[in-house]
Image (cartoon, rainbow, N blue to C red):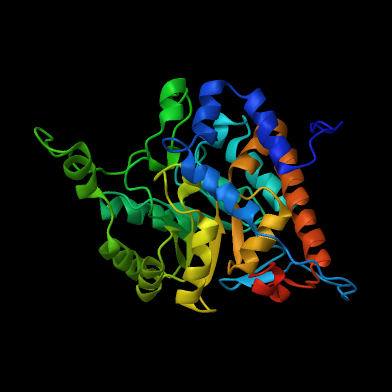
Length: 360
């Protein structure tokens, strides 16, 4: 018997079911936004504003969703986004997520804040993996994580750069969320940390946190330490995107952290066209934020994304159905993408362009 309720037929169904099933404080952490949720809402609204251009009688027999990304051959452009503490959603944690992803040939990005060991996860999955890295206050600590990722066979580094400080998480605060006993960022345990500077009379942000935050110099340093492809995640400005590539990054991920950091910011989808225009056709550009349908994947591709990352809906699917739920959610999204491609006359992803959108 399938663990998936028959009425779950879309990614939003999974999100709604997980919201009902999980404890309120846990859901506030997993699904909560920054401050008033304006950026999170805008992520979704940006997709809803766009209209696709249907095309009829096109010969799309034999079409497919395959692509090459950073030298890797992928079956489809749907990637599991890095998310912390999967054990909050399901006892199978990241292991179950990766099992579901591998069943659907989906590339997955393992978070540095995973609740399971990164080497164990890499050893236990047949699917392709990238590793998400928060640069640590001490370079020695960052380098330890990089070397572990290399040794375990991760094939790229995703460096999250848009959260040097946490956003204002009012939903979490109201719900009183705290990590339960037995759940922690196990891959960060034991890493060296700098001594905290005295904060008397100073700013908690500018004097307490930001002196240890990474800068562009740290990206240049990281590039010199590893041969793995590097992508910077959390880019919204074309100048930042161009600087990332100039320092040796192979790509960027256009993202606002799911609206969880800076509220009143730009949606990732709205930022995408200018970044593609600034970088040209070659560097890899991915995006995340607000994706719920295969039509959303098609819209992101039409505006310049090579591939997309999906976060909360897959974590919700994990909560509802474990590995089977993750597999099912990815199947739904890929099938919706194929239907959208067929109905817009796109035989392959290379056929998707701005002309796939109405009045673009």
